[in-house]
Image 1: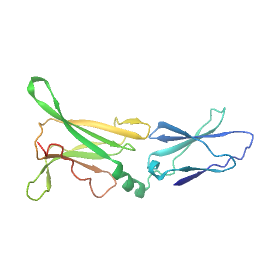
Image 2: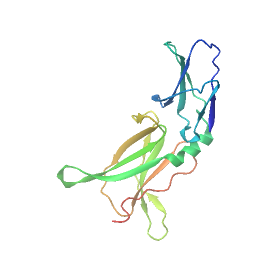
Image 3: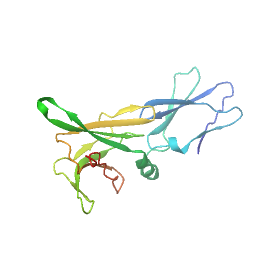
Image 4: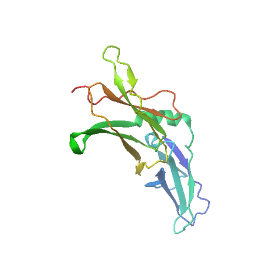
Length: 182
């Protein structure tokens, strides 16, 4: 649990607090009566989580982002990143591969295709497939999640996998190989 301390120095006014993920408005938080703090599940904490606070009936709002640029949270968040790769038919009988990356926050990532070797299991990059996605570059953000899609102009293959690396993290996630069973 994380505790957010709210100092309500003006007892006549009600202090309001709302969570935000990458500027997307999230849930309202309510402070229990006679307490000065709100408990938040650690599962909801990510580098892009901010809190917006204001006095009820006031237009003036302040934003507080206590988790920004915290390496330990970025590393922890990589376990919440998911990826997908699927075939999408095109005109004239061709197909492309559509990729999707979703995470609690908009991320700067690199995605690429790799071909898994049958014997060693190592995944060798498919040259020319690497794509860099900026953390502000047209991610779709909703309550507690962001996602980004793109495509590779290539048909599926049983040894073809999707690889992703997050900026700020030394390692990359395990390859995602959706066509391996075909």
